[in-house]
Image 1 (cartoon, one colour):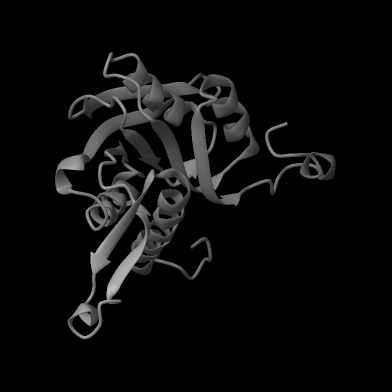
Image 2 (cartoon, helix red, strand yellow; image 1 turned 120 degrees about the horizontal axis):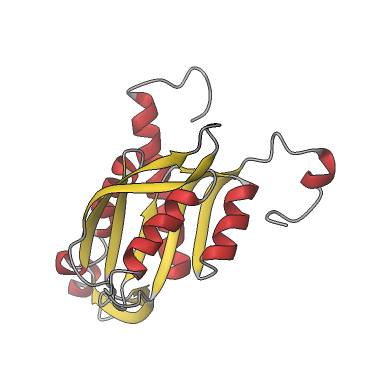
Length: 203
């Protein structure tokens, strides 16, 4: 994805492919499971033609949050994939429009929310934040605060899905939202000194 030769439209298509992969991992590790059995085509020729095993619990309810602009495609991908696993009535996509807030020296000081479309409560729902870049952590923290301060209930889980994240991001979210589960393809420590790279991320 980060290679100089990766340009549009391949760039967006690769984002879609990678987010499908990551969501599959998140569902396998974080979503509730249930024991189920289904008839297969083979049932017409043998009574053993039933599949039995663990699946994602169809009672699970999920909200995927589009953090506009970078999160628009990832959230849409998650919204589409979830429809192949859960009932449509158990899936919702919310939208939050925000921008980084900076001081006079252009240092990021937080995030400003310009608008949102939140479709209802989050009580006992899995709250997903598919956002490509986890840089300072200010945007994701502000987004989570928006839900927690709105009196919409308590989610069963809060999960962030990133393409890339930084040690600064990890340190920030651990301090402000220790309940956040973070998934990412790449931890970027490229500009950290050697002694920092030899420590556990976030310390």
